[in-house]
Image (cartoon, rainbow, N blue to C red; front, side, top):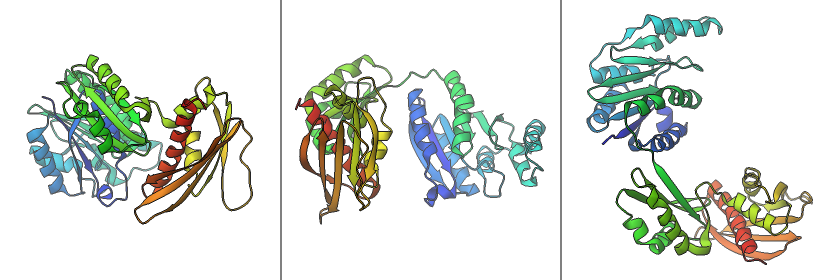
Length: 376
């Protein structure tokens, strides 16, 4: 079995100064090509720790991806750590040096520190970096493939797309991962798991099932490498079991669904007014996909304590978020006025910080979805 592992290298990740968006990207990408990550670690800028991490990974994984630590400074130690793990010596590569010098020819004098980026070990091939100075490495030894990529997200994604992913797909016979998702709002993970029962606890052989809480509700995901035809029946059963709580599947999003339902009721333009949400509703609606026949979001107003009216439209969605109680619950008041009217409704949500604001906005959109689907 082909196992993949990710090493995210950099003290800034462990200190919380930088969010590791590379890990999320590579998790999605490796799953999509049939090579899901089985292990992931964050490492400091420590040569010995990096060496030991590569040795540990080589003992259990067929593919090792590493991001970060390829810069020119003294604390960029991914090259040295892997060289130590393999017992190979770093040497300057003339071709790589020429490439780096050529890049700096248009930028100004090349700092001496950048010469470190032209170092290779005998088993490594350099991976070009067309938008940065840090080349990557591709190493194959003892049946294990290792790819070192820059930590800068734009550079890493370009190198993954142009170099690493095509090489992995050519190197391994990877079955694609088929995936289906059912999305619901208004119930918790445990409640959904109890309703779905064996669909989650005992899915068909070769199918993995999982439940994930998100700001926009709870998602149940079915995935398989070997039996994609089994997913449709699982989704159909989940839809029938969860009923009205479901707002969509796969790429559906709650805002787009709500706007589509309003469009079906004859609303062509929707605006919003919100208080104490820091614009969460406006941001979510503004990012919604525009579909034919759906209501068009024309903007909103944040209540900043001064009289103001929302943009003109056929309907106005009004949202107020009230303070949390002692149990961490918040009340959400919402109403829909205009050509279609929904009376003032009060809901309760959990959450803190930005999550609380977004959940309030999604609760309002789900209420609109349910109201419009009721035909009133």
